[in-house]
Amino acid sequence: MNSSNRKPAWKQNDKPQGPPPEPRICPLEVEVWNNDVEQALKVLKGKMAKDGILAELKKRRHAEKPSEKKRRKHREALKKLRKSRGRKARQQRTGPNTNTKRR
Image 1 (cartoon, helix red, strand yellow):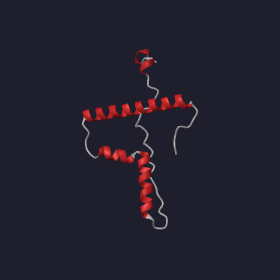
Image 2 (cartoon, one colour; image 1 turned 90 degrees about the vertical axis):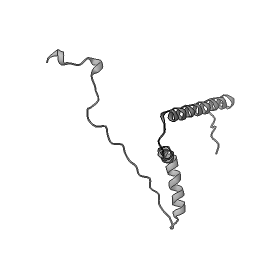
Image 3 (cartoon, one colour; image 1 turned 45 degrees about the horizontal axis):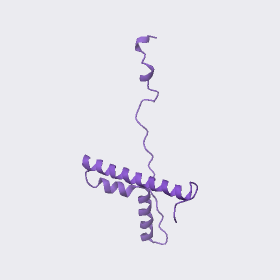
Image 4 (cartoon, helix red, strand yellow; image 1 turned 30 degrees about the vertical axis):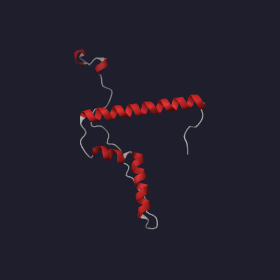
């Protein structure tokens, strides 16, 4: 074996070459009971909202400029930060093992 053809250890790729695996697609299914289509639509919309499909559709309705995308990402990061800070403050007041989720 010729040592000049070998790649350095940091350049070796242990991953198999080829196309990436196909993402699994799980269709949303809703059963209609007693011809109650309204209730089935309500359940379907709830499942779509939970999976984030509705938010994705809203985002893709129109093109988003890079500056708008940057602003949106910044707003989302601030929202996440505020939420975590509020959660930490509640934990300090009530203790770490209490369930703060209200029902």
